[in-house]
Figure 1: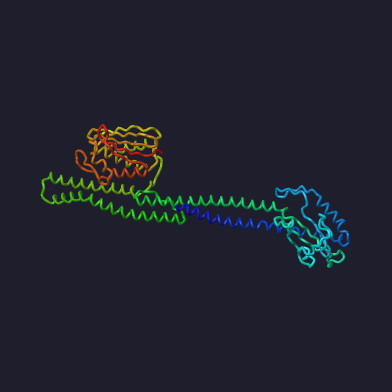
Figure 2: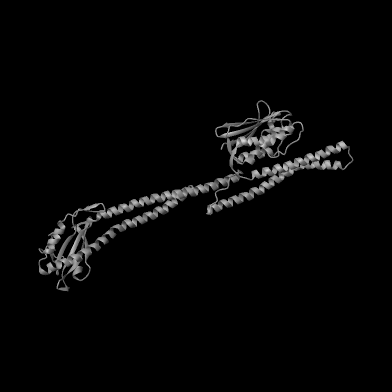
Length: 479
């Protein structure tokens, strides 16, 4: 099972179980809570009515006195009320009054007159000075619907200590059952929304965590594959700390391997010119004709220039290779870039007796990147074209656009690239002998161009032109 799914299921399980048990407790507590509130209201009602019935009960006219008339009038009222979306048109409670022996002397429904209620818990406890209440089936033998009875003592008007009867207020539980059901449904509905919202939050948090973890994973895979990659996002949490640790580890490991590799390569490349310098220096210590002395002196100067060029280009290549991403990015106008390149190369072209044919690119054509690196990369391509062009030849620079890609092509009219070398020209320190002089370059120019192209999300290629000569193509994404 994937980590993201595990995180989501774990989060949802915890929140879901918590919400389930909370809802279960709330639903289970709704009914007793409502009944307790109703019972409290019935206690108040019973005691108020007990005070109102005291005069008639003491005078022996409880069945046909003012109290009975008022109770009947109240039950005959049409209320027209709406309580929390539920209509209420009549008074639901029933009033019974018993004498001091527990015999019913008044019933608002006229059913149980003369019945002995002294054994019922509400009357029995009240006659003994205690709080009396009970819940009994509305119909004998049917426990699905019950009636709540709450009693209050009736004291003699002239002697508040003498108990003369008990007044009981009864209300069927079905009267407030709709409120209980509605409350339970509302709790379940809100609980379902809570669980759904919790699932969405869990999904969002899981997605956010997995997005950051996946970025770290891709970064680690790129590092292990040796592919340059920008550092992962570095927040202030543990994932950000892990990203910083990975970046620091990559820098140290790559730096060590990079130095070892370049020391080996540089040592290998320096052996040949140093051997030539040492040999020429030894021969110069001997008596030589002036012509030979001049030749060996020029050889030392040429080898020194080759070493200097190698070191300079190696440093430039090392700088761009160590960057996994562009340090500077801005909009670069292609026309201005090529104009600067042409002006910069004019002295070299004139010294070599070459012409530069530059096709003006479309106006407002631009790329995103570092103008200095792009200019250096194109300068390297132009240097190669100058080195391999015959005296009096022409070098062409052409700009082509295909979709969202821009291609800058630099073509010479020299001998072209041998087939065996086409696959190796972008290797470090690999170079071909220049026509005429037979000298070789540092072999670092084209690797530098390749790294610059990579940093800009592009590519570079070198091929032989069908009409002769070689053509280097630098491809970059348009801005």
